[in-house]
View (cartoon, rainbow, N blue to C red):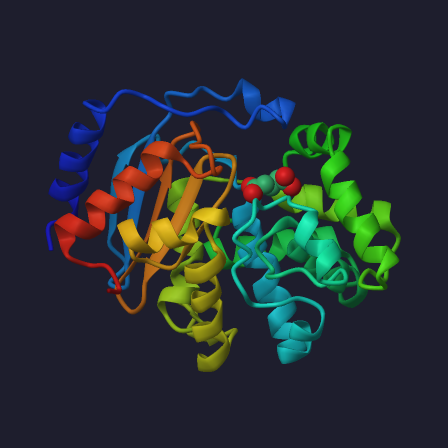
Length: 304
Ligand code: GLU
């Protein structure tokens, strides 16, 4: 497969499309990002890399970090997690409070904010140094020791974090949060503020391409069943209330973030990360989604 020609062709076609969408202005630091940035990287199971655009620029991975947090919590607690968080798509915006009240403080899935806050609470219980341990874990997955939190982004989000504070308070009132609320929120905001490049993201998602075995160390982190379930959750819940559209148009499991990044995987073949900061109304990168739709159509490599 000539991935390089295909992604160069995709980039050319994307240039013809009028730019649409908005930056994630509700996090003031993210409103400062250059909206014209674009990067795409494919990493294959044969360790080949294919690149286009600003592939070495690091950006705010935001909700993509929810996949790393869930992986760590799943490694520690296994299926006990599902007592505190569900595995159904929400069909509601990622920060909706409505469903949470109806469903007695048990979030629909680990990729909406409420679910990720529960996972953060679980990690606060089980890790001695949650921030240090999680950044080491992400560094290990991506094979890069310089990956870090962006404290300014974490602070910026905390200052405007009224919705997340409401979510966690509501869950605490239902008994689904154990730790001090401020402690868990601080950890959650740090996770969202992690900065990575598309190259580092696709490399770290090779874990899910490779059924839970870290490459090239050949170290199993998730057993086959857990890895299958991670991919299922990404497929059904990874794209806000647009997971159906994403399956329909792209057809790969993955996760997006309001920093404009999207990572998706094709089991046993490749991982792809794309970054374009302007978001559509649902919070997914406008051009990122288009790029991935073109990729799976042109390569005929969607899981469907
Ligand atoms: N830090 C963001 C929030 O909590 C994450 C949003 C996202 O990327 O989905 O609102």
